Image 1 (cartoon, rainbow, N blue to C red):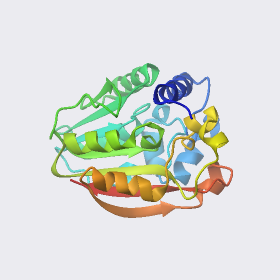
Image 2 (spheres, rainbow, N blue to C red):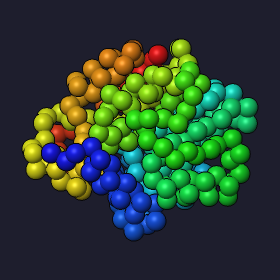
Image 3 (cartoon, helix red, strand yellow):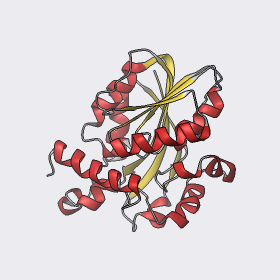
Length: 247
């Protein structure tokens, strides 16, 4: 079994390459196909066109479409990548709110910062950090979003505990993520491409939901995309789970 630090190194290497256009990570494709993938997982044409450089063909859903984001809210994106979901959230918070993106990949942070500056998103900031140990104050966030990232974290319980810590009471987390519907083989769990591709480190759906509840969240299942495995994951027994988790 790959140890946690090795897993993080595998993921970081893949996403460094994705940020620089040298390779692909979770649900990634050739640039010409990125818009089609984004549309297939729930993004509208105008959302894809808003900041096209931020759409790298990554993700398994559109958490900003699920989230109840209001003007003035503070929004946190776990695993913000090139910033697409942050920028869409910023349009909902308005200038009276703020959006914080956290990512562990230096090149992604740089790409997201460049996109924010280019498109004039003054209410969006990006922080280099680990979603298992968030560089965010306790009880400071109204809404958390995350798109196909928590599956990459070796210790998902830590992620959920950290999310609970930083949320205000009554706040919600909206997540699109890959969960398993059957156990992987040992070979699949140790396959570097599957680890970086949102599969090798994923857990069974029931275990995922149990970890959220153990962290203190009340969980509502909003949608389950059980066809995504046919479109992007070679038929592996998994789904894209969309949830709301309320503190």
